[in-house]
Length: 111
Length: 109
Image (cartoon, rainbow over all chains, first blue to last red; front, top):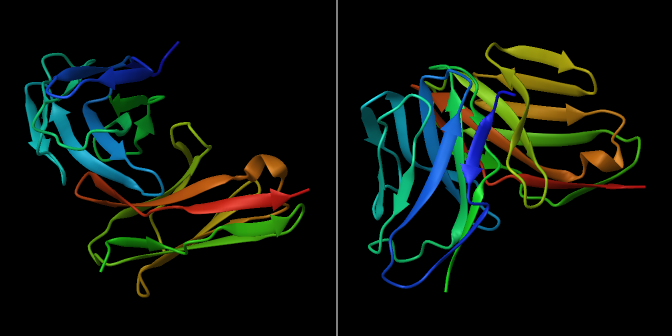
């Protein structure tokens, strides 16, 4: 069953904590993306990767980090430097230059 | 000026009517254009994409693109209660998507 999975579905973070959001795809897509969505707003690009072992900053990369060690996986770490991390986080993947498809999302809340 | 702007809504239409959604973009180098539907609390799902000027139809949905006017629209014909959602316009330039804030559509039974 092909698709994009994200875990966990809900995540709670304490002040000063780093947390890692998982994103896995079995679509054999080269490109993967992380977006953040705040209530009533569109999606904003955090990081993207077009190939294994390479990634680029998006529009709002500060306070976040990523890795791309495998084609299937693109985890996002929300560091303590991100001062307002409460949001809905969406991972997407695509054949390079083609339509992006989204995972189900992770809702992160700061306690 | 925002890169991608959508009519803010909310848009309320009666069942069976046509819902018209508009989107303008600022980057003339934009290469392809997408409409996603997002139900409350869920992730976006692709409805349609369009690359060339003109109309593209898929079932009850029609996307229209006018690159000279930097304008893309989505028409939903015979609107159904299941069409009630937020519709996101996305514009692609160099493998990166820029999204509008979305238009929320409510279809009244």
